[in-house]
Amino acid sequence: QVQLTESGGGSVQAGGSLRLSCAASGYANTRSSMAWFRQAPGKEREGVAAITTGGSSAYYADSVRGRFTVSQNNAKSTVYLQMNSLKPEDTAMYYCAAAQRRGGPWWDPNKYNNWGQGTQVTVSS
Image (cartoon, rainbow, N blue to C red; front, side):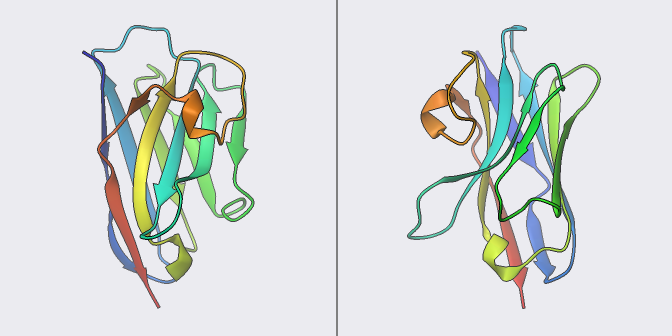
């Protein structure tokens, strides 16, 4: 049974930082990429960042580029999202996702076949 478990969410003031973690368990070494998505109330789920499991490529939404950094550990079973200079508009539920198939836009939720339960990030002004 594949499971993705996020942690590290919380409440911070604007300008602060948080680091999200996504631990993959029960997972065969068949992932092609992992990503972070977020969804605010009343809005569609949007891609925030993604990284190939080889670690050779990382992708970011324009709204977070330069502030957020996606990375993975050497064993490639945990993916991180370092979030700096947080803004109130970053407030959302953040989800980790894993894809097995290659190809397709990294920001398309349909590319990913495993999802975590989400962790809440709240940024106050």
